[in-house]
Image (cartoon, rainbow, N blue to C red; front, side, top):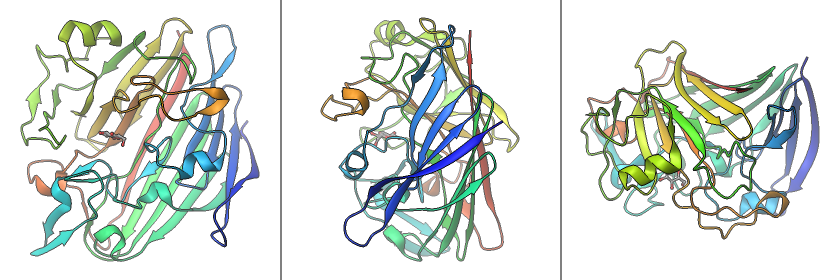
Length: 342
Ligand code: BGC
């Protein structure tokens, strides 16, 4: 049984409307969703003794979400991650996007899908958010109709993304939740054991754009096919965290992506998806300056993201999985976040 309740969360500046909060509850989980950016604002999951903690980073009120902040819990689009120099050529025409992370366009531009109010519709076991991204928004071609549906089923939160375009356009949607399975506000994620089912990853240049090489993980710090304890692993390889795309199975069937286990609490998060990639980001740019829920501060490495998505900069790399959506086609992807204890 899932219940859904709805309440006002905050008022946008004059005339822009009210942001609502939707609370989904199952026997195992409690999830708060906002109509601002389709954000997951809270996610309470039990530990092995049955005691619940909120395992996503976020803010207590709307002001937190409206300030400059790194996409906490939000849906990002029209194209998640980076497009090199914010430019691409499609059907012979060159497009220039907003550059918001020099010298590239990141997560949809200056005002991406995370910075807009979506239209909610309550479902028996979740919420569907929709919006129309206008032709030319942040420089992207054509109008795009988008539906993001969150549903809850026991310990499983399912996120489905659908889109239809009036003109050919790149589309890449993901959710940017930062997790800490010890409970949000815990100082780091070094005691989390991580497994990612990827034989290959994408090396990046100094601006975090993939070089174009699809590299085997074998014998590198990127081999996470067997569980590694994150802190020890980073130390062993002398690296400062992950911010990389791992290449998953390319089929559009549901496949296993990743598993994260926090031994202390017993909490486990397993991720399944229809997407060909996942950006594993260890919160490298968090710096402890944001004021989070319950007085939390979020230092570097205090949360991790598993952003299931198409490969970064795919629009400029013909040998990457296609990121283009054409009129008459439907973009349809699903990611399953499965919580349990072990
Ligand atoms: C990117 C990071 C970026 C973060 C927050 C991630 O998806 O890969 O480089 O800093 O989002 O903006």
